[in-house]
Image (cartoon, rainbow, N blue to C red; front, side, top):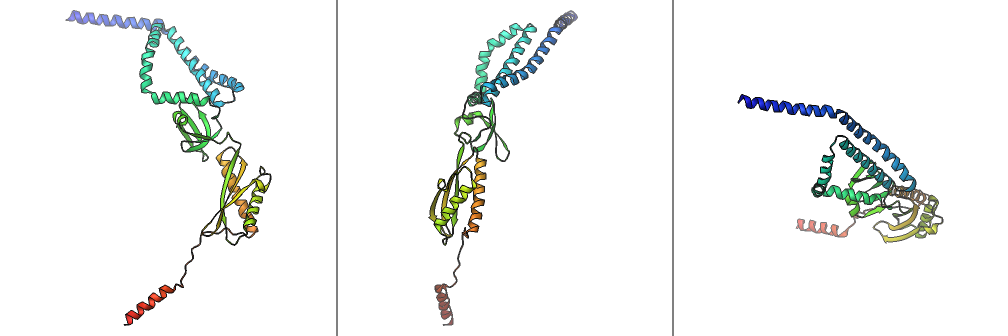
Length: 300
């Protein structure tokens, strides 16, 4: 028993000595491999910036330049990893990794279907000219400025400064409204005036006010004006006009400005914008007759 224990102990010592000798022998290679990995990491950052600037000179889409820069950085990091493995004499391990990449890739692909779909969707979105960083878009119930398009998600900044992160797959599969693609937007304005108002005066005054408020409207005839209905307390109308705008916020500001100026013009012209009124009538003869009958019955 003692012989067996001593033999096992000697084998363990020999093994540890062998490992120690291998580590000591490969310390220079290990240090060099670590330096190569660090160098590849820092070089990838500069490659990302350089490639992005180079692409920006030839391609107008920021999403494409960012995508190509990130892919270039990943390639540099992978090259550094393979070089480090070669320095450590792990070429066989590298060959085994490449050989098993096919089987592992299939398993990983099945497990990460959602992630891979978002990655490919991000690549497709990056090369779409109708969706670029800085555009004002509306999709999936959110609207805002496109801040970033990467391999994972689609980032929007709404008008209230909130950041919305949407998976690329949903952007690609759902409708998207891009306000920036059109340099003009139509403003819809609904209002009502009192029944005593001169309707022709209302129409002309409204058109002139909007024309004088917005420089892009050359003449009052460019403003569309339609009376729509006899309301409960007013005659309602719909006014439509075009403005130079590329996002919903500019449209909202234009509508607010139009409401303010129209109210001022109506006040000067003594045109009433009525609010709903309920009239209570107390001279109902039927109620008085019913009360008189009740008194008669009670007296009898």
